Image 1 (cartoon, rainbow, N blue to C red):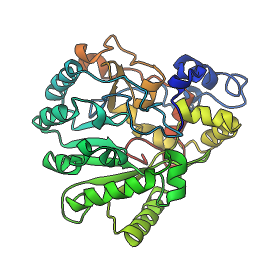
Image 2 (spheres, helix red, strand yellow):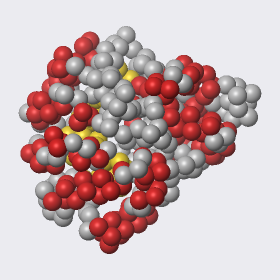
Image 3 (cartoon, rainbow, N blue to C red):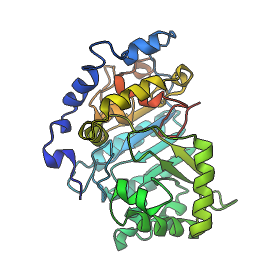
Length: 350
């Protein structure tokens, strides 16, 4: 089994080391333009935050999987878990803002011991779109999680699940032996309670990210292929497929360096840069909250320890007037969100 960078005591477990790699080499010597210079060419620097619409909360880095390309560096050995006290602070912010989407992520968010309590409390607030990002296998990892499909249905949760491919080989290569079979079993369980089924109102979306050092294909085309394969082979239904570009951070950066693909991948990202995507990147209307309550412009910045550029640094001191209009923190990993059709946690951005 792959171990987390932290468990391996890799130098890349240090976010500052990752930022040094992203800022030096081909970007320092001028072979490739830095992201801030690229967006400045079209008058889009600095990026500034608009009104908060999406609050994305990482409730912990603990996970039952150790995926090859995980940007969170999540795994069973990660013990960082959000406390109920921090969850209560998050609930206060949700109540007092106009945010229409609450997005719970991890790790495997379901492994937080207060996960169900948090979902129940947050459901009472009535956000428009309540998302839980599930790796699917958690539903089949232990009997205590077997009823998650019914729990999600009870609270009308929008389930977004990672699914690297419709074939066993590609899925298990990226996420570990046995992941594909457990994922198929979990999808069938979700379908059984209505998720992804026509006219059920229960939203089940899948997320695809490439298994190697290449960019994802066209989202609409891939969705068609996924739906055809999963229905024909397993009778599985889902609503939408989101394609997400792997960002060169954490375990994917480790993979790029180890496979000697880092420079080629960065060239590919820069060459695929699309200025039209910049106005719709997720950091414009999103706040990312870490397991310990600190605020970031996006989930990727959280993993690089790039906190928001504001006097307000923690969810406990949330102040909308101070956060709105802030300058977004950027580095070269941001090319991943602006390549081709663009990429965010909600898929393509153009």
